[in-house]
Length: 180
Image 1 (tube, one colour):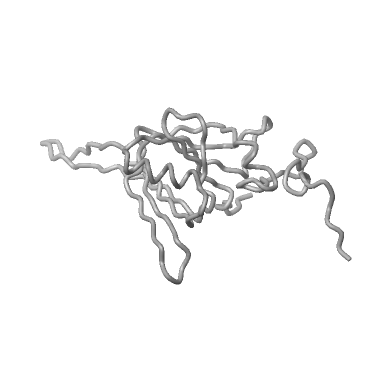
Image 2 (tube, rainbow, N blue to C red):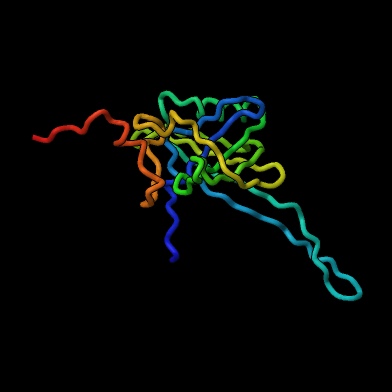
């Protein structure tokens, strides 16, 4: 059965290329992926042929600014100091039996970064990440502290099958609050 994909379950993680600790923008609102490949027509005596150009793969990011966000600081520094990044798009609704999540992995650079601070609206940040080469698909391990009840992500999707019992979110609480 076809269902609408759940966009809120797809989260971006970033890491400076060469570092060991990934981080996520804590107040992500949305991101989009766009692909483009130009085709140039070349006229020959036998007719037109088309030469393909390299694939252009971009991620656009939008988030609210946070007062304490390591990922925000790293991304801001990455464009100013011109260092490469790693990016994972993790689908928290697609968890494997070993606790990893379906993901897409990219290496590349932030090419645009704009932070706005409006008088009446929440401060936001928007950026564009350009991929070097081709994205890779695989399974990623999400930092366990991000999945805890007080973590960045709260809790993740669980299936209704017996082998996927919830062990996060409310299950982390010592006891349920009493309603009088």
